[in-house]
Image (cartoon, rainbow, N blue to C red; front, side, top):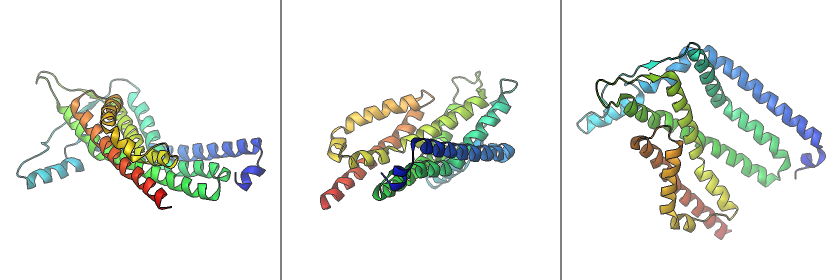
Length: 265
């Protein structure tokens, strides 16, 4: 334990935890108020993937033009509201989601700062590195979902029709819930290399074992992707599974480097 940890009593720890929670809740409340007030900007960002001029579709069309064709044709999907107070409630929920996402670096800082007095100097260094890397990977997963996985999923499912007589009427609540759920799941999935690195450091995992069970891992990835995917179509399943498989392969490299460094030492 660190020196500060040895000097503090249980009640002092509890008091410090309460202070951390108060600071986090206060910062979240302030940020939530700001995101709620900037409604137009907030929903311009949130609803952008439903338009055919979204940056992902434009880039794909440019790529298609270079290859001599068009990848994403112009489309239009209208969102509807089905309850009296639903739009206001969705506004509150979306503002809270955005606030937590914006304030997450501060929340992470407060958490690491709270636990750091109980750690040795070398442990503190690793905690800050792991926390920073974990946050960066989480944000990469969220951004990948927003700019690639969700837009392509929405484009496919939002315009898919079994017949011209059946019109898609997608609710705003369904849209927001799907976007938030997929973003959270992809953010968590992108923590795989960090977790594998930690297990390798604890000598609970090695690269040869991961290579040996690669086929089993692929099956597990498909099962997990099917569970976390809010829809049941093959297209979305493939979009979610591919990054997970690439992360698994990256994790093998990361774990292998941990063992190599340990052998050098």
